[in-house]
Length: 342
Image (cartoon, rainbow, N blue to C red):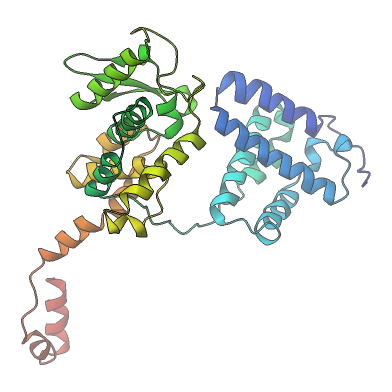
């Protein structure tokens, strides 16, 4: 192990990590379990990297974690682990959060923290947003046999996912006490960072949930989960993936376009957003429904709305057959003026 010279600042890197998780992530920020796990994985990778470089973790002080070490770690992620830019950026975001915390708790490390925080994110290519057309959603729902209890559960589950555009875990966490089933029905969704939002329910969705609650003998104000497995345990995300894949296989036999789609639970969220955009819902409304913290995230759906782009292009007047010859008969000054009018 590399023995580093004793630092003038005794703060130990490992202790700072423990404080960061126990005080900042769990108590102050109350990040979701998934975010906590992502941060945990990031620092586990960083520590393993430092060990592979022959550093003694117990001897590392905060001042020893230099921007160069962090840059080497990020290079390791991309070159050795073959992580894509998106994954690298997720790791770097966790590291940025840690050093912002350190800068506040240990002001004597402010300069080095600022240098680490200034390490830029990679420019990641925007992934094409995959979504299902309305008839494809209907095909999947229509493939469900609702004559038995599991079929009714699955139908209500997928309908609620499409109705609200909520993340899978957000839907699985819904309890009867989160529902308001009346003339104007709604559901309370607990999103990232334990932030609450209210989503309006269609009358048909409200009826499905009301019937499911009654069928499972749940009280209206019950705190038990609505969507459970055969052992009466909360359904998992893997369970939802299995359920959706089963109905996807059935529906793709009837709707050929489904065969070219990679169907997964999150595609319902994308589909809800895209269909709202196509129905002329404002980007702000879409963001509120999905629980986006930034409008930048929601704007990705507008970029992906190929149908709207196609219709916009159709509104452009088609050039006449004589335009090309007319264009090149103009002299330079006239050509510039012509272009400026476009």
